Amino acid sequence: MSGADQAAIICAIAISVLVVALVVVLVKVARVVDVASATIRETGDSLVPLLDELTEATQSANRQLEKIDVITDSVVETTTNISSLISTLTDTIGGPLLRVGEIVRGITGLLGRKKK
Image 1: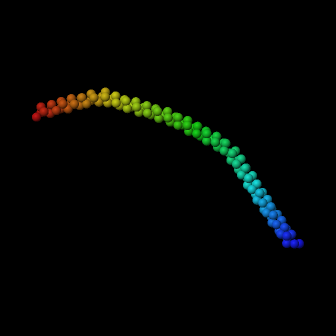
Image 2: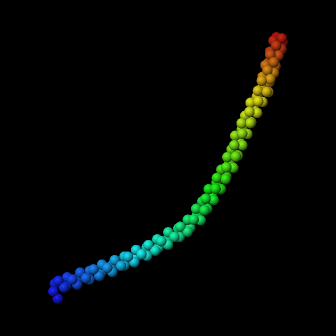
Image 3: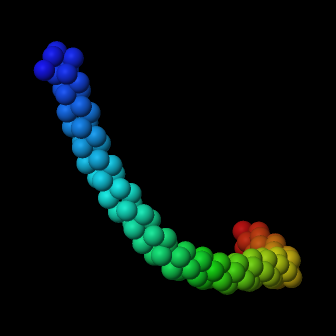
C-alpha cells in the first residue's frame, strides 16, 4: 500500500466520521423542530380560548364603564340643579333677610340712642 492509498483511506474515514456526526446533528435538529412544532400547536390551541376570555372581559369592562358614565352624568346634572337651587334660595331668602337685618339694626340703633 502506497502513501496515496493510505491518504485516501484516511480521507474516506474522516469523511465517514463527518457524515455520521452530521447525521447525529440532523437527527437532534429534527427532534427540536418536532418539539417546537408541538409547542407552537399547543400554544395556538390555548391562545384561542384565552383571546375569547379577553374579549369577554373587555366587553364587560366597557359595559361597566357605560354604567359609570350614566352615573357621572346624573351626578353632574344633580350638582347643577343643587347649585341652581342654592342660588335661587340665596336670591329669594337672602335679600329680604339682609333687609330685615338692616331694619333691626336700624331700630336697635334708634332705641339705643333714645336711652342715652
